[in-house]
Image (cartoon, rainbow over all chains, first blue to last red; front, side, top):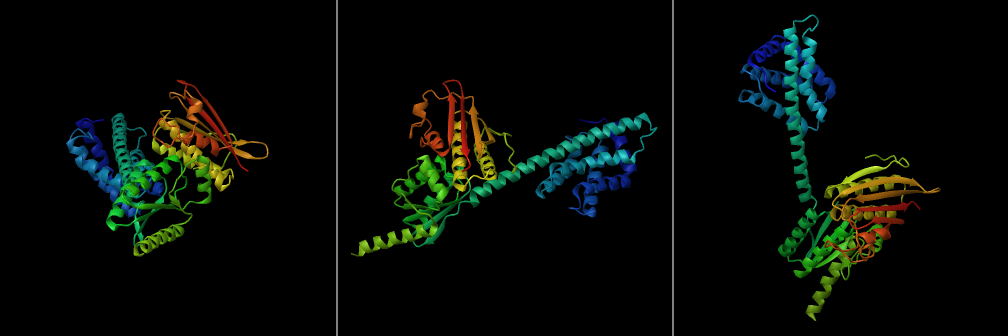
Length: 283
Length: 139
């Protein structure tokens, strides 16, 4: 929504005349809502910056948040909602930072017996503040989405380390849900590490996987087959009693793949196999 | 997520994407823990729910899951209804055969899920969508 040049000028005058009272009342409103998580001094500084940016935008002529003259105001709102989103403030706590101006305006301007012109300006100012609020809210939501996307990506990376347990034995501890995207990452990591370390044994530990359904099993089986094609043998460890019973009931067969209850058992198994093949060679 | 389990209050999850399968799993686990199912039964039910939710998504083209705590006299149970408006299952016996799949999976989801729960009821016909009701009782 845009304002005419006259409206912009009058609202600017309104904001300017009551500047100190407005920023004080505005800050109070926000402070109550944030319950002391930001100091009053910090809030006052933010409010004063916003107040100044709004004034500048209004003075640039007929106000429109999307116009070039409001660039600085948009930047200020973006900064504000970004920092609120990153600091973990809720959507309404972020919105109140902008909408606080409306309440302050209604508090400061005496509407009893006021000139109809003043009332009309107040309504126009209210609509303008709604615009600022919507913009802030959108930026806030966008920032949160970015944060979530970043975290999902980080999780994908974080949750799949391949560790070298022993000479010739690598292990990949799986944690959480093994969906198709993660299964792909797991398989790639494991196969790469097998080549890098030229390890003949890989242990896939599923202690941290809460439920093994047919999809998870299929991903694991495919990884094992791929590793075999590269000449490495996989051992699956971390099969807890409830998982074992579920796998049996589901009817999943791991065939001739070695499975162990714990990672220690799997490592012992791998070391024994390495020892056996060494002896076989020396005889 | 809510942990107090009221009898007969169904909790509904829409199944439209991969993440929803995870949400169904988490809801079922929460409810199963609250209904005091043993760890083995929790795992079995969660796994069955995971299979059926994925079937709803992959073969039914999406749908919903409804989780309810039911009272069976001396014991409590959990009933989950998966429904979709997909193409339905034309040959149910074949679909329930171990190893039969039309989607490149292991072919154990439907038949396996039936073995993981205490009661399994399936209502489907070609072109009619599919509605699967499973119940697991606390022992």
